[in-house]
Image (cartoon, rainbow, N blue to C red; front, side, top):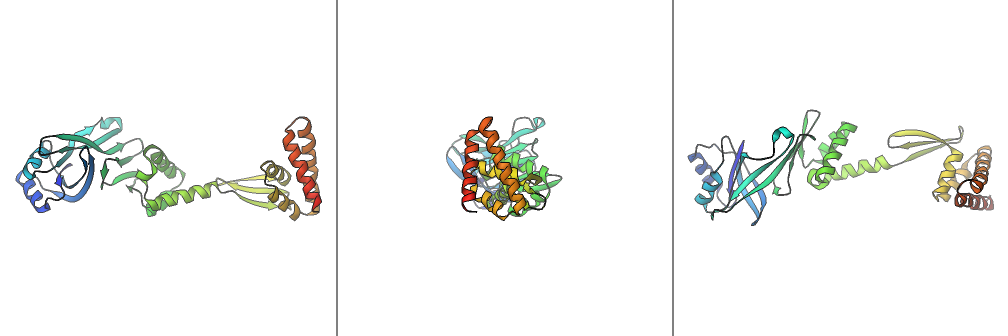
Length: 275
């Protein structure tokens, strides 16, 4: 499929009539803006069945304005290499021209991505036989997230390669950020009966002895949280925790982290002061 168009201030009817003189049936009228060496220019363009090479020059002289052509002759790179670009040729009435890349075809990531040189062209990403428009909408992002880890990882790879703001709409960005927040969120449940803390992180569940968990909180300077857990513990569990912390002090004073031992000692001193 080729592409032909002229600057958008030219009446569409005139463009269609001119194209028909060359045997072209103009389809799918739309406007796109292209960043050229003479600034951002908006074109009215049409899909064309047929060979378009050289027609931007003809249209530019006919309408005395910038004209655009696209087609197989403007493929940059080898399609067989799975990574190539689709370009357009802009021609001005004075004969000057410029070739500008507008779409990246990435066969490795199954995506067609508009370049930063164009506004108004929709890209595509293909996941498990489904096609999603780029920029991806919030609704489509929900569908992709529901497809699971592989689908999400594909979008993350595309974002890392081509930038979040080119691939996602503002709604989709919000969905991704919310997903990341939930992924990083750590949920904990203290089970005093078993003496363990159940931790949910990155979708994985693990169990840690309460005493070890408390020691970790102290190491991370989360003293208030550690005190709160100990104060709510049954007396027997509380004694076990304190006994474990006292052992940690002795071990770290001799062969471990002396600063850590000091932290635990200060913590226990403060804890006993309020009990």
